[in-house]
Amino acid sequence: MTIRTRFAPSPTGFLHIGGARTALFSWAYARKHHGQFILRIEDTDVERSTPEAVQAILDGMQWLGLDWDEGPFYQMQRMDRYKEIIRQMLDEGTAYYCYSSREELDAMREQQMQAGLKPRYDGRWRPEEGKILPPKPENIPPVVRFRNPPSGTVAWDDLVKGRIEISNTELDDLIIARADGTPTYNFCVVVDDWDMNITHVLRGDDHVNNTPRQINLLRALGANVPQYAHLSMILGDDGQKLSKRHGAVSVMQYHGDGYLPEAVLNYLARLGWSHGDDEVFDGRQFCQWFDLDHITPSAAQFNTEKLRWLNAHYIKQADLAHLAADIRQRLEDRGVAVSEHPELRSVIELYRERVHTLNELADAIAYFYHKPVMDAAAREKHLTLEIVPVIQALTEQLAGIDWTSEQIHAAIDHAVQSNGLKFPKVAMPLRVLLTGGAQSPSIDAVMALLGKNEVLARIHEGL
RNA sequence: GUCCCCAUCGUCUAGAGGCCUAGGACACCUCCCUUUCACGGAGGCGACCGGGGUUCGACUCCCCGUGGGGACGCCA
Image 1 (cartoon, rainbow, N blue to C red):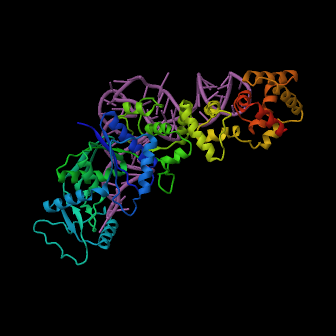
Image 2 (image 1 turned 180 degrees about the vertical axis):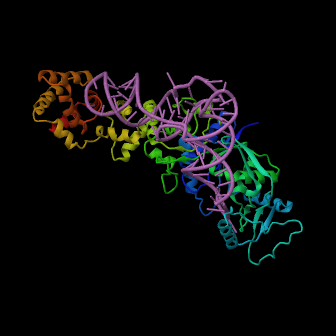
Image 3 (image 1 turned 30 degrees about the vertical axis):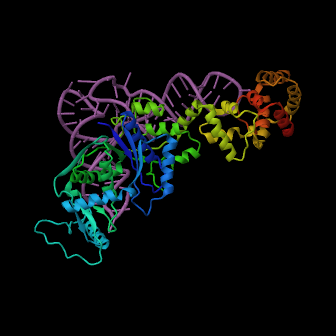
């Protein structure tokens, strides 16, 4: 049997971190088993679905490198198929028309809640042998309901949570087609998973409650029931549930914030899944290792600090040309034009080990391409009256040397020795003068990259 | 309210009855490296929700409790 998984987002917003992980796991599972990964857009909520959201989801998946083998399929384009099945169910008697109005239903729910019961449709329009249905009201277009088994239990062996068993008495006759004839979620999912031969459904555990309904529907249709794996949710950094209002951000926001997709992918992979003590691995490795047996059933809290650590790791490993292209753009976004000298790649090499995000990297090296704003406190502290003449003397010497790191270092050393100082005494004021602040890599390395003219100019201007 | 799910360091997690004096990672602390800040290296701090069982033996299995979460839509 070929493994076929799917990711089925509804295009009502961007691809957030929870959806991305579901997609990642589904993708990895298919890849691991040399199966197919299908992308399906669940856009039957016409009110809330937007083409922008579809694009945002596609962008997010592409950025993470999650490629799909089939699709994207759009449910709105499958209407004929759904209607055909609904017609068939109506004919077979596994579905029926219900004329209850929304108001009637709301009142019913209200009453049941009051009575301490689980709100359920009471089946008043469900045809039974010998039962007399209420008279059909005029002007109320009916919905179509699924005739759920009235007794017994539905059970499945969830690949993450183990066996889950639910009594049919807990379920009611769900609506499969709205009054306007459009099919609803639980129904479309079932038909699609069936038609698309999905073997493994990986999804958020907020769908656990839908599963028994879907299984009943599948059985009524005579379809195979796929395996289910319900992934627990991802909580925000603060342990709170992620929502549009609170903490839920688009995966593309991570791009904007300077994270590498491989870092996000690696981080997400470890959130709720593990492979012994392994922490750092790429997508290829993940696809080889991934399994359902090591998925944690409990919710996981997002930890940005760990993501940052992983990101720093991947920045150190990243291809220089690729990094340079990215950083060039980020500098441009900051209004900093990257000139030929110093060479961007060299500057990145010097700085990549010191940052956690690409934005930090861009910010840190901007001073190579435009005059830095000098940190007043740093200047005050390091550019003392006594040191100014030393720097001036050093400047003259620098003017005459070959511009290599070694020569520069020797010149600084000379200034240090001849004045009976410690190295930082001279290095720090230079650092402030050249970079604007008190932190940088080795000052001779910085100077070498900055170039003789620029160094002399900045010292001159700064003094 | 009803049903369902979950529960190991602050966080992500390892753990398939003896391998556990509970391991790793992030964060934090100390030291080392050092030209400042980082990086890196070496250490350290730090957890099995509670109570009952089962068992020669329970982090691991069962029950109850507690806490947290989810679902109960003509949303997905």
